[in-house]
Image (cartoon, rainbow, N blue to C red; front, side):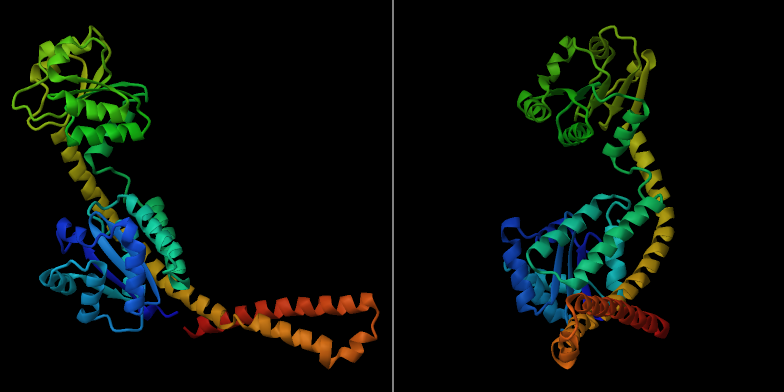
Length: 410
């Protein structure tokens, strides 16, 4: 189990389009057979396949040379429908890491330092599930087990001890943080104006975080109904805004209207004479809320421009943490080499306990059989206990001593 036989082949957003990366996503129904074939035909000892929306990574151990011919076969085995030019591009621009560099790379990946959005925690789960699935398929062994555990521990340490994920950078997470900072309760009445992708994603995000009271307005009723059904909400057309009487606490709007959709007249109807301060999140470009509404009413208002400005600042703050994270990863990469070496010693000494047991048995049943047989039962049991005790102690001392000698020689 040598680290120098470990490789990572990475196809990511840094060198390829999402469409090109998508060509390397194996369907769940086929992935077991495909990966098993890759492992067998390429002569890999262990294999883990990580596939996300913006990266595909192959982690494997092999003594074979990982060259362009190897990469051509790897990509074609994953997707036999790839064209010759596609395979050539993948083999040319895919990043290949080996040994300690490969370990460092996968620690960076799981810690989100290599992600499209630095600081996003989802990649830890994606990595862990990728390993679990490949382990279930019988594709992994001792090396990947140790690497997976060390990788997850490193990622958790980085997210715990640094501020890499402290400041949210997505529109959804920033908007959600805003609501929580305003002490909005989970049962707040959330009205969505527009049922496009942005609002649909925002609504599902809030539902995931335990918000439960939703109303959806959209230009077309079928689209409003589709989202409302997923949320357990009521659906209306935009023309019904002027007749809505159920009030709201949070208004989230994102339409493609070229005019201000939320006029003073519309807002007054939605407000229903409620004097409590309201929150409006306007994700439309141009904005949906008329400036007069903001002047006349008690509102916490935030536009998509404000959110993006904060997101950009947060990205900057996260990047300042990268050097701290890189220092941790450098330390953990070195640490993994030590873990591997210790494990190698343990495996090398793996046969010793059985051999000692056989020697003990031979001593009792043959070499000293005559002496043992004249003992009474209690004495015989005492001798066996002493030998079993010495056996366990010798095994522990042998392995510990070997580790100490090895570490001193490093």
